[in-house]
Amino acid sequence: MLGKKMIILIPFILISSCTKIERFGRGKANEVVIVYDGAVREAKLLQSVLQDTFYTPRPEPLFFTYPVTYDQFAPFKGYRNVVIITTYTSPDYPIFKEIFGERPPGIYLSKNVYEEGDAVIGIVSSTPTTLWNFVYEKKDYVKGVLLARYREILRKKAYFAGHDKKFSEEFGKKYGFTFDFPEGWAYVVQDTNFASIAKHYPDRFMFFYRENAPRLFDASEIINLRNALTDKYYEGDYVYKEHIRVKDTTFMDQPAIKVFGIWQNDKEYIGGPFETLAFNLNNKFYMFDMAVFAPDRNEKLQFIIRMELIVESFKLVE
Image 1 (cartoon, helix red, strand yellow):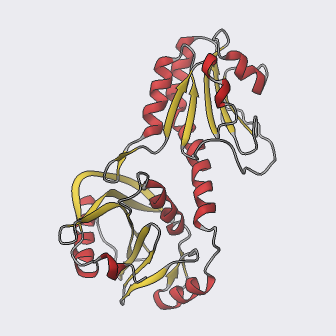
Image 2: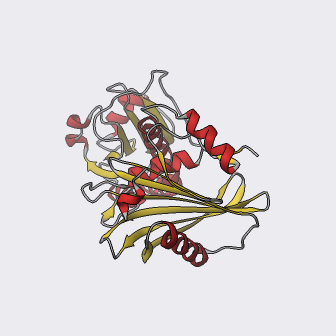
Image 3: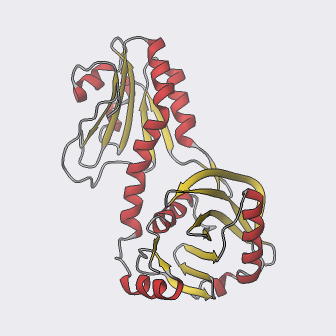
C-alpha cells in the first residue's frame, strides 16, 4: 500500500536581542536547558508544559528538557535554548545578571549570548512566592517563544532544497487553491476534489480535500471522514482511536479543528502519526491531512510540523 502512496512587549516582559542571524548553537533545536537553583516546582512546571507528549506511536515530547543547577551549567553554555529561573538571592542569579544585567522582575530574551544561534530566556522575581506565580502565568509565553524558534529552524529544513513554484502554480490551476510547496514532493493521487502528494526519506504524505458546501463538524465527524477518504485512496488506512488529541483553533481567520493521532493499516502492518486540519471558507469545506511513516526514526513529530508549515502557506487562486 505504501509503495503505491510513494509513487510520488506586555507588562513585566522585556525583550533584548542581538541582530545577528541565528545559525548554530549547541544541542538540537528541540532541546531546552532549564537552570533552576531552588525553583524546583517552577522547573517541573515548565518541563511538563514544554514536553507536551504526543504519540507517534511511541511517546514523543515536543521538547526535550534538561534541568541543571548553577554548578552544573558551565558545560551547557552555548546550548541553543536555555531558560533561567531565578530570584535575586538564588545561586543562579549571577548567570542571569551576567547576561541581562540588573533588571526588575520580568521575562527577558537575549540571543547569541555564548554562541551564534543560541538564546537565553531569563525569568527573575523578587521572592520564591512571586516567582511561582509569575512562571505559572507566563509558562505558555515561554513555550511560544521556544516553539517559534523551533518552527523557524524546521521551516529552513523544509525549504532547504528550494521552492517548487511550477508545482504550486499547476496545483492552483487544477484545484483553485495552492501552497508554497518545497522541492521534492510529487502527486500520488489526483481526483476532482482530492489530491495526495508524497515525499521520501522519511516517507511523508499529505492530502487535500474540498467539498462545495460548508460542514458542521466535530472530532468524530472529522475522523469518520478521514477514514472514508483513506479507505478509498490509501488502501485501508484508518485512525487508531487511542491517543487522539483535538484542538479548536482558527485558520484563515475562520474557526477550525485540528485532530492529531495515529493512523494504521492492518493489511500492511504499518502506521504512524497524522494531523488533520478542517475548516470552512467561502461556503466550502476543506480538510488537509499530514502523515508520516518512519519506523526507523525515534523523532517523527518534526516532520508533521514541517508539513504544518506548508499547510500554513495556503492561498486561494480562484
